[in-house]
Image (cartoon, rainbow, N blue to C red):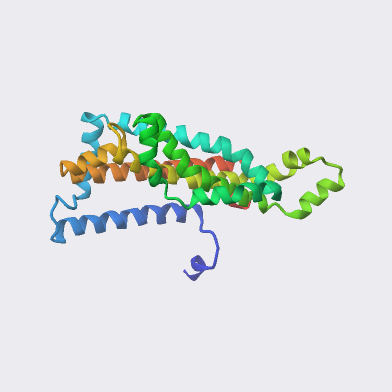
Length: 263
């Protein structure tokens, strides 16, 4: 038994699957026990069964799938813009101290401002439509994604750069054939981490100013004391996040199958 608790020793795949389902099962059992026997009113804590019925009801009668797809579209609008801009800038700033010192103070200045502070301004400038939500996601994701990309590029071993120079590589060739390939696994890890953050801020943006979307559905449920709907939305967001995470891991294993993390 103690062999399963060795430091950093990976478990067999079957063990990982069993433990994952066991963790979820324990959570559901505890939730059900507290909801039924914890002297908590249903209005505050619905049971798992009531939450499942609420999920079915939302999909059948309230267009929940459309709300999810709309929120996902808004996320992708801002997230892809962040990715397209942060990808080359991270490579540039992580490789050249000149550009890093030029831009880093501004990036860090923006990074320490809570993204929700920009929401009133984005509403004034762009209204409450999809563009505004996409800009909120961009502001929320881009500075952090850029810093993560810079750190990934900065971890490229100096001996790799020196070898490229010794072989007569130009700066451009060194970036494209040495720095970029080494950095791509870290880029994907950073992208995976920040995609979850994007979901957080789209919910906040839609709760503050929206007439559609998952966040709007949460705030409407709160106004009409539909607690089971709030739990239903939270569960679905969690499942979407879990699926997204598994998708990123699958892409990582296919693109970087040689990496220790992919094994």
